[in-house]
Image (cartoon, rainbow, N blue to C red):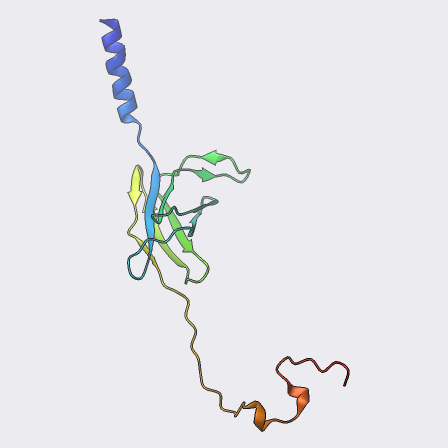
Length: 140
């Protein structure tokens, strides 16, 4: 009888423990998962990297000494996603307790805009060799 009561009490205690975490995934603008995205949580001093499915889970914070500490309840956190070649994205959330699933963070590729030159840059039009495009004139 005592063993049954002890097992029942243990089951209730284990069932009461809540997993505290902020989780989500990162996609590109086509909805495809992005791996190796750097996820930063502030405050919290935590950085981690997404897996191949673009998934991340933050279930701890770090104090000033670098030690793991529990997530703070009723706190506003900022999650930033960064990957070279993409514009960084950040979002804020109010974490209360338990598991918090963020909407997918969508990263957009960096783009450049090419603008036509106002000047004629044809090398045949500029015989002055001092304005070369990297040629070597050693020995002249």
